[in-house]
Image (cartoon, rainbow, N blue to C red; front, top):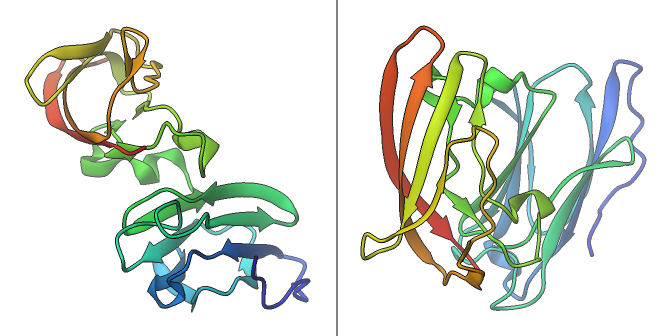
Length: 207
């Protein structure tokens, strides 16, 4: 576990962000970036750090691994954790090239295309890393009335469906864990103004 500095002397309008990193065996592949309102304000390597941040700014922490294998588990049981004024706000371990954590940001900031729906592209139901990444779910804002969501395997067989905006998929089919791989989705989105939209794409399931 690595933290280079602790207890930064922050101003009254700032909070202390503590970055804790337990690296895997390939230290040179690890780096991180911290953005404030889309502007890079700090960065580092496999060593953790303590950074004073504006308590009201929209912040984005990006954990990078140039080896495209995350911090766990092929080459060691690494992970990272984030603490804001000693309160844990994020962590991760299993990912490919990046793992991002947003905080202090309005919900609408994470909605691409300004269409009211955010659909993640990957999750890892394996009990490692970020506990919020154990289930697949979507985010919809107040402009969305309903969503019919379908997930298919590589052969086109439907393995999951839901008519609830607040569904959660644990990566299983008929009680059996689905294997790592790429799964297709289709979503029929109906908005409160009566408009409809079909969204399609892929989900990476990582174990």
